[in-house]
Image 1 (cartoon, rainbow, N blue to C red):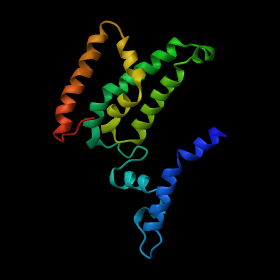
Image 2: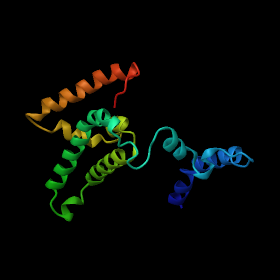
Image 3: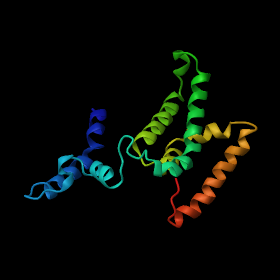
Image 4: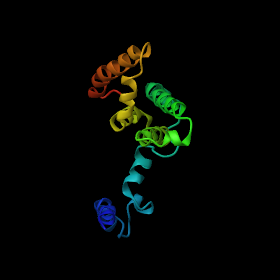
Amino acid sequence: KQWYQRRVRVPLPFVVFQGYLADLHCNHDNPAEWCQSGISYSFIQRHYWGNGPFMYWEAKQLPNFLLASPMLVLVGVVTIGYLRQHHSLRDLVTMDTPGYGHLACLAAIALVNMNVQVVTRFLCSSCPLLFLYCANIGKPWDFVVLLYFGCYATIGTALFSTFYPWT
């Protein structure tokens, strides 16, 4: 019973708000553009921000992909390293497997479906296993990883706060 109540209570505010927006903007002679899609936020993301499967993959976005590439490579190294360490399905049934699966899925979703400018912020803020892996990476890569995160935090803060593009 509690499980069912949680499943209903969590999405309820979103559903109610979408219903409110539909009632406010879609029941007129001149409905809003997003009324066809049903959910206002997905329309806004697709129409104004260019989000969608592979919609951000353009030649002019190559610098942003280069800025995001260290984090995407790191996620690949972390995921492949974990899979190599656990050879069989029995080995994969551990406490930390969902965390690594979460990291890999979020990276794949971000790479395919999101603005690449937010990939680093998105992955760093949602996957603590990334930092745990980096903390145990060992020599000679420990200095490189520490330098990357230090530069990212310092340069990123300066550029982001002055409205320059930064991942």
